[in-house]
Amino acid sequence: MQIEPKFAPASLPAASPLLGGHAPGGGVDAAVAAHYGDPVAEQWALQVGAALTDLSHFGVVRVSGPDRLSLLTTLGSQVVTDIGASSRELLMLDASGHIAFSAGVIDRDQVAYLITDAGRAAELADYILRMRFLSRLEVEVAGDLAPVGFTLGGPLQRALAGELVWEDPWPGVCEGGASYGPAVEGAPRFAIWLAPRQKLQNAVGAALQKANTGFPLETELGYEVKEPALAGIAAWEALRIQAHRPRYGREVDARSLPHELDWLRTAVHLHKGCYCGQESVARIVNLGKPPRRLAFVSLDGSTDDLPRVGTEIKADGKKVGSLTSVARHCEDGPIGLAVVKRGAKSGRVDVGGVAGLVSEIVNSEGKADVSPTERPGAGLRGSVAGLTGGQKAGLGLA
Image 1: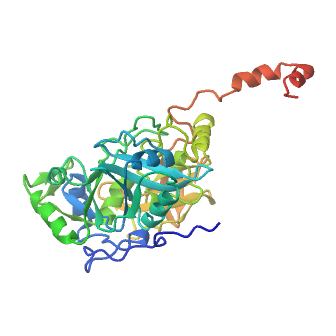
Image 2: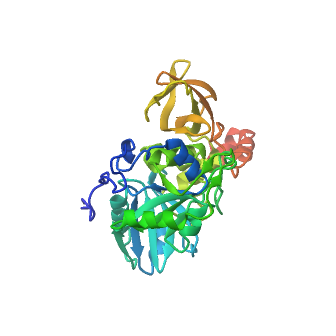
Image 3: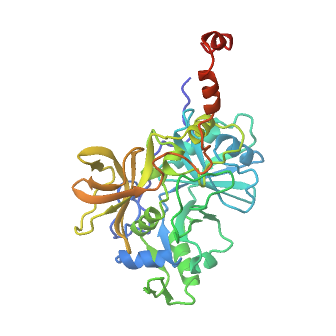
């Protein structure tokens, strides 16, 4: 039976009111500004929690009703029934364990808010609605809310205290989670404020004004941040890439598994009850070897042009993966994330004619820190190998 969607099909949002005459971001980020005139200064400000980034092209789904948290826990890879005032992240998978949706989750005043990437809110809301069965809840796309990003630990966190804010758990390993590699030391903690969309310019201006105390601030490398400011999506992406943080709109394709992107850190609880795709998640944790893995790419900074997202990555003339994210970092220069074959070696690569250096994020063995040291059943296989043909037949193994 064909199920007609309740909500409008996925589409990229209209231009943000904060875009103005500034250069837009690329691809899925075309609705917001790449920068506001000084990309380097914007990164420094964002790094110390003194800048806001327009993420209003991201979507928000509002779920209300007494069964909202139990249903989200049932559908997703994370436990949210005990979320309280904290922030969580979850994935929704298909039956083969491939990533269908990702969302940051907060719950306030008996309402859950799910923050998802650009163009995904309507489809996510429709999916939850179709899966609710007898659950007592209501679902809607929260078009009245506009996501705005910042980093924790600075003046904007203090200015936005008491607002609707999701605090990204990355790069920590949450309860029930697992990691496929070390976290980046000193990586910023990201957060997203759900601002009123109809008064977005006024709300952002008021937040920046409220945060304007205790300036100038100084970064670790001695750069002076004079006042709170807007930072474009280019600054946000540069810090995200440097933190090895996967993003649905960039790193995910139809074949993506959570393990490949180190997303078990924050979005998967390995000990929760049954959910779609759980068997695949458990199997890969136990047996290892997801087919691909997330890698970090350092790029030659001698040219002004960056390779495009989607550019093939080649080693010794053979394709080993694709560039999924790219930005120019204020300290590290041109950097990117890539999804490569599990067996691809770290080292020199060619990225569309630009020299690069690939290094591990997800380890090439495909083993999580909670994976067993020996494949399950290895001892049994050894015992079976020593049996006679008649003994194997008696056990139904011949």
